[in-house]
Image (cartoon, rainbow, N blue to C red):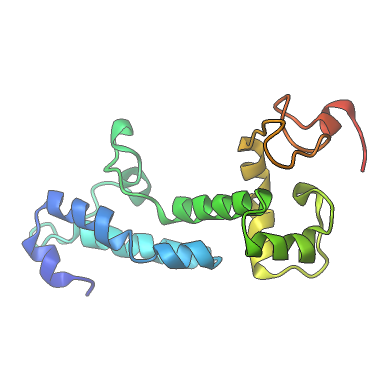
Length: 175
């Protein structure tokens, strides 16, 4: 059983702190570098949920769903981060690194996949798992990016620098 000794010795508050700061931190590196299957993310959540509600007197009854436990404290949750949300956040960070052309990895990805086009408009016939991960998140990540003219490379037609939509979409310009 996962941490059965500490589950019996810790209070509910101690368990929450343990999950927030220890159990949630263990898979962070893997969530950053690998596309993690949903089944693995669900299993991590179930393990933490079982640890939280493991009480001998209550026979491990789960009083609140894991999704509600993962809400911020201001919204009635316990402030524990959901593993799926963390994986999406790391995917957005990866997209931001690609868009900012920040380092050797981004240069490699631009050379191999983007090939002079706008990253949002790039299509790849045989993508790697990393590019597939970027394709899944690019719509969400790109909608949150705003560019300042004069600071780095800004694509006049396809970046959001003036409006909430790219000028090309606003004016109906095709590739």
